[in-house]
Length: 79
Image (tube, rainbow, N blue to C red; front, side, top):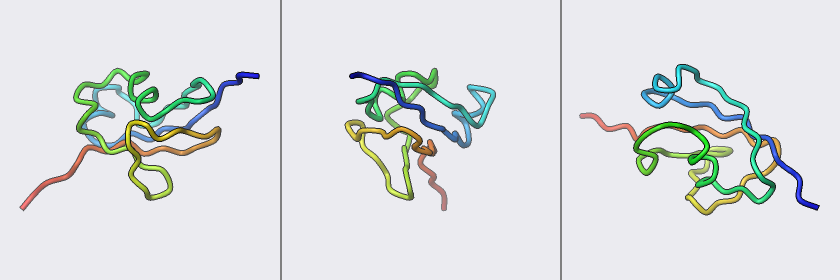
């Protein structure tokens, strides 16, 4: 059986301004990856975003779980 999963996404900095919101709840296919999640959000420069779950940075092929809370943040640089 192929069921969907729901993830809560918190978006920080410039990507949240582009979406005009900081939190989303997304419904994705049951075997969704981080790449699927990013493709469902209309933000540019997806390759330059950090996707974090439970304090651990995920890569594009990491699978998501129902009920995950995901943070999306751009890299921070400064000096």
